Length: 380
Image 1: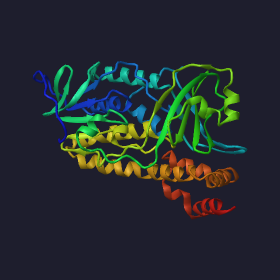
Image 2: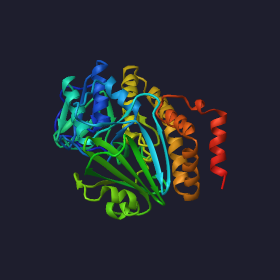
Image 3: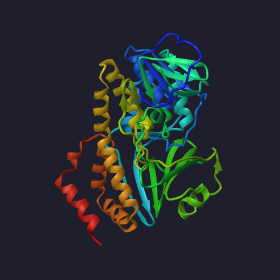
Image 4: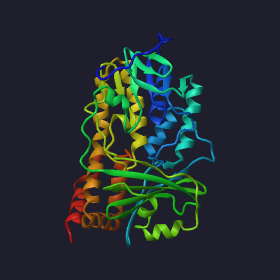
């Protein structure tokens, strides 16, 4: 592995199969998958549970299925199912439901706690409060000394130091996008995730509990504040007026980070560290859980190229959709034509949502669906 190294102060102890830097959802999912696959895993993180990060907190149906495959169980009263997606742009409203299982809105802290419990059940070695200082021979240097592993996994998020230290960072994206999240204590008014659109900013409203909603704002340009951005959605601001704010605002950005590739030598990247374009489709956690299972399979086969190929295939559709929506987001007239088309043709929206949810292949859109979508985008 290339990049700077930091001297370590003590010899390594037992060497796990996977040494995972980052104890968020991606790192914990990878560790759990490793244990289920008969591998040992150590997780290092400088924080301690519960770890909260800015997140839209909506799990698509496929992501819910991957959580179940990992044996992660949320308490019955935690989280809130959502049945589909609703777009709002001024007076335009388009909505569609998932064809199969529902998605799940859940507070990041509750999801993290459930992942920690499952990791403890399967005997993952969890080293909280351990700061990683840099790469070292066969592992990483920490504030507690050298820690080694057969494979090193960078699961340390959007601004991954492991990605930077290993020389896998690519130049940042051209467009600067930011996100900020806040929770309100009030009952959800719909069983869908709502996406409210305005010029240069979107608001994502996710039901996360019986009496709580999460609101994530994404925007282009310079840094801003939650209340200034929320004021650009008067109807949403009115709906939230008087509700108790139940969390501290948490923000992130710029959002676009892509590595040159997801592995080098015996180092692998997973989750946001493995590449992130934008939160506009809400698939970050879903992609991370898919990657975690594939990474463990690649380690078992001693074939990191298998993992790289999987990541490329996995990201192809969501990244294409993200770039399409960002193109539309920057062109208000085109955006409104798109939403009007989806509102006028709900079956087309349902097909697109089924593809997005991985319930149907892209070819299921069909020539007729592609034609109706194209016609709607070009009509005045």
